[in-house]
Image (cartoon, rainbow, N blue to C red):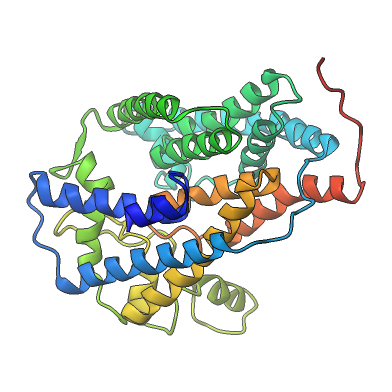
Length: 384
């Protein structure tokens, strides 16, 4: 499947089919060849993963092979970019204030662990997870400056990048730091500003930084007897093994979580939405991530996995094809979705946090729509 995907994508390593095949082959190889104490995978789990990878890959190849009209959403409005940049700078002190509060009220004696617990809402002073609408502004502002890097000073890229990476560091979140790296790398790769070799060296540096974050938080690379490598890669196949197909309490409660949330908020139904932070298990390893197949196999079993993979693969292939045409909006959009594609072996991140994803897409589209229709427009001075 990997070779077939590479051939159809003209050896482009960023295509959805290539990434999907590669990540699952990597997980399978590590599960087979590395030393670990995890039990053998059940047949149903192997079949589910195979169907997921195949359906997603083939459907993405189908949609990326189709021809589409060119989009006029290509250049972001400079005025809107300035607004996003200004809001990012003005709201950044809120993050500093949170960090100061988390450290000064922390109880563990480890400032990095205190930051992480506060970000998760597991402290007395911070009983709720740290969530802020302006985080989306910081992320979108960073994206837009990378997209418009030909025309503007690199100071804007550095400033917006620093603000968003600082958010990942203050919350001590390895996933935020990792996804930030992946998204920025994809934009630069799509715009042909970096090579595969540079991506490799950058990935090594990012891996080292993630290890530092882990050591700051826990002073060790293992958790609960399992290594970071096991927990965050092939271990998710074992945790998926513990999920019983079609075992949801209410119909589609995981897949259609956002609808349950909306209807519950409107007091139409009494059923509360599923918590996006899933419960922990202790065996076969301590984790609360069950791969991207979790909501579909738990709600609808193997058929749900096949349908979801086909639909999502088709969407990813369409966005990828539009991005490959050089359209800046779709390059940024594909860079956003690339995390969902790459980290599908960890958790489902499209439907589970759909409301956040929709907010990001809207905020990203606004400056492009403004340029298309001549709204909030100021002429940008290009550097000679």
